[in-house]
Image (cartoon, rainbow, N blue to C red; front, side, top):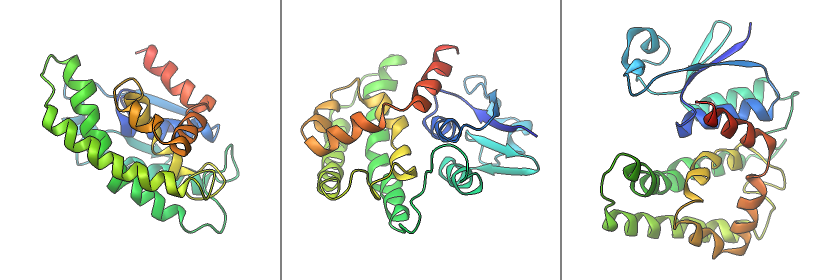
Length: 211
């Protein structure tokens, strides 16, 4: 039975799951959920994710939600497929996955909302929010710069979920003034350039262009 991902390719959490599936070279069916039409609040979707948020994931009888939980399932259950997304014996991958979720993503999401999404819907950017979020992100990136002087990637010398989880946010922010925060840190800049080159990300961006 083919796996199914229910979501929107313009959703950062959905992108996370799609990238992981492509890294693993797994066959799946993408089921578009029209967020503007409120399809994520309908009974059919709520049966998959009672919180009404994309993505939702099906693998046979198994139903999952929360993008980072889904990517971990994919990485561990299909560990023998495609790109290894966990480092064997490297427990600190869990720490860096938590850092992305609780330190990096909150600041990155605020910047995406202010610098990318608001302009698309005709809302004014809140300069104070941008300034505060940039300062918070800069602190995180300083820690990343130090970490990346010790290993090629965040958790070890292999590309893992700890790196992959950043890709959806980085994709949207690279076209904004936030890029200067990344470029100002040589190790971070090299890491970003490295992790944004895999074919899996290009395949997901191609899916966006078809929507």
